Amino acid sequence: QVQLVESGGGLVQPGGSLRLSCAASGFTFSSYAMGWLRQAPGKEREVVAGVTWNGGSTAYADSVKGRFTISRDNTKNAVYLQMNNLTPEDTAGYYCARKMRISTWDRATHYPYWGQGTQVTVSS
Image 1 (spheres, rainbow, N blue to C red):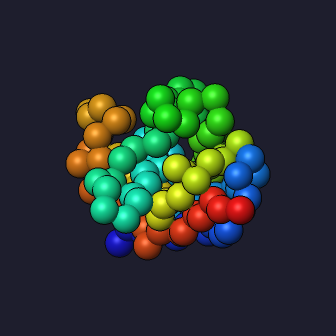
Image 2 (cartoon, rainbow, N blue to C red; image 1 turned 90 degrees about the horizontal axis):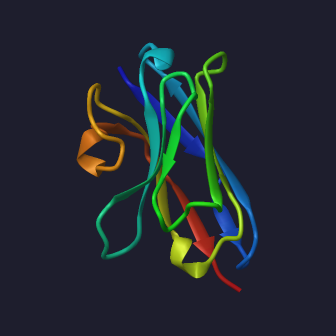
């Protein structure tokens, strides 16, 4: 079955950086686009970044553009999210997710599989 395991979250000061990792298994990883979603308390889950099956194209929510970078390594069945210049508004649970085929990258409902999440807290 599809398994996605995130790691790398934690507590960081404003302006700091974190790198999230996601290990995927149970499916042909290189055949699927992937994304990172986040959900803050009381808010809906939102897609912050997406990457195509081969890493050739990426997309970002406006709120993270220029600060976050999504990447993948198909030889390791892994996807990453480098987060720089973090702000308290980035505090959320972050989830690695597999995207449905033939769907846009920016809707959370287009990601039917996601991991257990990793918490990112940005605070001084």
